Image (cartoon, rainbow, N blue to C red; front, side, top):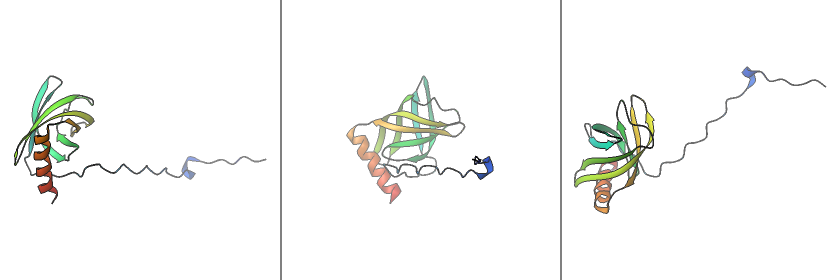
Length: 120
């Protein structure tokens, strides 16, 4: 009985699994929108690429490692927003994807108001 062989050129590409839908829609903030952050013995202020109720992508050429806990501060039209967050992923020389872990109710209300205006 002859064996069938499959060459590398005969192989079909495996489809990538569909990415999970986002829990919260992202919004592009106005140009020059900054977030101040501190964590891992560092502090800085950087531009924001996008923001949602669940997190934020902060532009930074040398971000801290994933898993680092940060304290964030940024201004919304209704006032300042202070957030405890965790770095979920890092894109070297680009920035860091940060998940919000905790904020008080007034801060969440200010963030929601800002996002509602940005997404509308």
